[in-house]
Image (cartoon, rainbow, N blue to C red):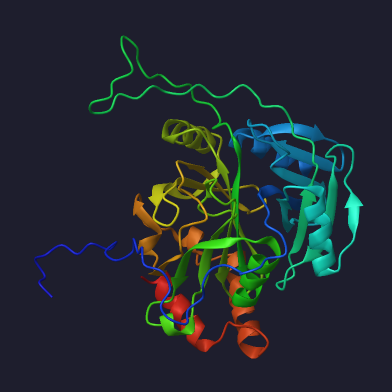
Length: 380
């Protein structure tokens, strides 16, 4: 290697080719239903007042707040992004997906041997509830009541190259929360990654946008997938759900769209000044291309502001790329120990214990070779 030639750490990471012969196709030929989007995420937390205070700083609007339940919404029309119920300890309950029609909920329920129930009047519609192979509660809903859109955060007119739109005016954005517009995606970790991935493709009709594999282990198959809704010719977010192989079945993070980079950056400054902990950012991802900024809420959950993500229709086949820490972003600071889950502390101790448990058990996909691949990723 020529030591005087700069090495591009992103070389070969924007991979456009699809699967090699015999590799995962990234979709099911005949899924039970095709969901349209994520509806909301559900959590349990012991202190709803503290949760509501951080949510306001992060840019949510509260649409319901009782002694036992908190609904957090975005500015765009739709259901709440997050539902938090009072519980003895903080935990992620599971994702809720939105179907196109009531009939789809009944079809899904029949396919997974679940019943269909009515949702509370605060939400409207019907729901079918089951669990994925990793144990996360999964709901499919239809007929839910959409909240009306809220006034949007003011956009900045940008002067760029040959397109000049701002005259006799300056950019002086107020230091305020970055208004959350909508829920974008959730990332889950599973020690039964492939089984769980196939369950979502078969039952919800999701399709894979990108696969990642451990360097040197492509022949063993992918270990992470970015998965979108199949809306036919209508473009959908690059990923609504992302799944990764790991020693424990757990929530990794969730992401919420804001208007643009200016709003994201000013909102980040507001969070920093309020004493909140930035996990990683600001930067631009490779898979999905979105500008990101990651924060920890008071209960330790990782949440993301994002803007300017990719949109794919049903025609694009999955991309394949090696998983590396340096390949997580096109620009921005290196991924932090907190974001990678290797920062010393309670969470890293739990993950280490999960590694030992998974290696002792034989009924999961996380083995010694996968552990070595994960260590290689974290140290890349």
